[in-house]
View 1 (tube, rainbow, N blue to C red):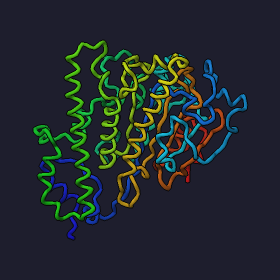
View 2: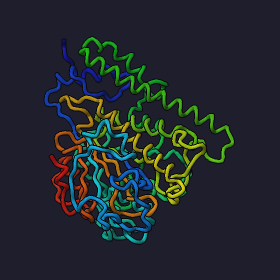
View 3: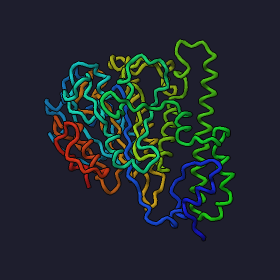
Length: 448
């Protein structure tokens, strides 16, 4: 089979330029191709219900107040530091079981709350910040350049987008400040604005003058690319078709959601139409767009915010409830809404798994999967949604391939800064750094 260079291949589909996944037939003519490292942060607001998430807490009552690692002090939890095989998953974590050998549960890490701002605003906006508490002058928040941009300064120079910021907050009622709805910052006071609308994100990734005149980019590109099919191997032909089928599915989903929104807008609801849109479909659509961006090399670094902190706007959560519910309001009455909150936590975990599973089905140039070459972190800025505690945060790290020891429950010593994990990830991404924010060292148990 005659091989073709990536440049020639892209020129042949130039009628509507779209980024392409790795193809062996194309890569053979491009010597020196290497597999990029990626990093994704999947942020969940309002914390979690501890009894459903953390091992050993299924029968515990809800701690009252910011009591930190409350049950550790009673000697009911794991030792001060331990690493155990991750053999069993709690109800909230259960959706991750098919990928249990590629994830690490990390417990015991803390953050410092800086007095002077709202708890929810700071737990979101400062989640990835490189600032030590009380060191930033002229701002109430300890926000400096966040981890995603610090890493992108190193790994994002060759990609069209150094970072991409995804938000799954579809509501337009901005009742809170930007600090409740963003985790990515260029620096103190300089927000990296996220994109909430799937259509706008699609246009940002694939928009061209030709695409603007076409209702279906994939049809336009495939028409131009027919002459290239005979130059691809059978396997690459299948991969090429699968990739554009995925794009076509994304386009179809966007059109469906847009049609639903228009139809719902004509109905007299007490809440906005976005309340009634299929929440999971919307999140998965944004997740699929992020996966495509990582797959095609449009970016190597992304943040993915499931929802804003403390907004009382309701959602149906894919018909989990008979009427829209506010995650934040339910979190302040865990006793009454415990079962519903556990459903929401598991729902968010299912969307996280969807992204992981998609990444794990995409083959890279060296035979590994896209997940093997990515650090995909699930986390929240609160350890418990009811008590607003900043300690013992819920953290999962997936992927990392041969760089990372996986399938573990790493229980850190009480008082271990979350920044230790960020420092570890920065080093795994190739940065030569010895500290990050208030870090005290790396997590050795995570490094292979």
